[in-house]
Image 1 (cartoon, rainbow, N blue to C red):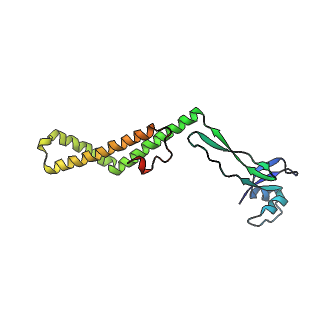
Image 2: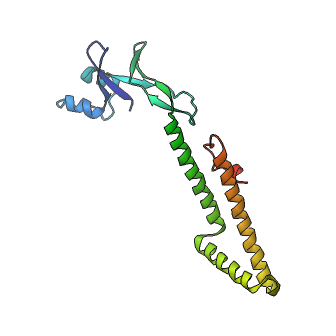
Image 3: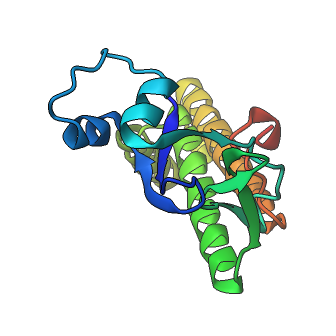
Amino acid sequence: MPEYIKTNETNTIIVKWPYTFNDLQEENPNVVFPSTPDNRCFLKFGNAHPVITKSQPRFDENKERLVKRSPELINGVWTITWDIVSLSSQQLQNIRTRRINAVRAECDRRIRLIFNERDERFAIIRVNELLLKGKLNWTSAEAIEANTIEANFQQIRFLKGKAEEIEAMMPIPLNFRNDSYWS
């Protein structure tokens, strides 16, 4: 259902916005409306007009935000337009902090695909056991195990390095979860 605005009789002053079907029914308790009233019902019983919302303009999400303006009468049509507002330095810092935290969470998620927390703890304990035994005393199976654990830890170091690269970007891209940033 379109959005409506109730105006004065000369259609120059906003009385209520948004104006809903419930508002129309409450103001006209003795009228039975169709389940989906058209613009004529709103105009006849509520002096309410449809509101057109302009498409959102392009803006830089890293530096700006959109603000929906109150409806204005433009060429006889109530229209909602948008303002582009620059973000304050505090807002920019808050966005950066949230994105850094999101990058770190994405890095952790990718690490958990390599090792879940239990497996990671086991790998650390196992590496310590192998180090205490000494590389020269390893069986061939233990050497393979150590190489596998080391390869996994190299993947983790690689992911942490990628996370640091992404965190250093100004601005941090909105699509940083894309695999292209992590390979």
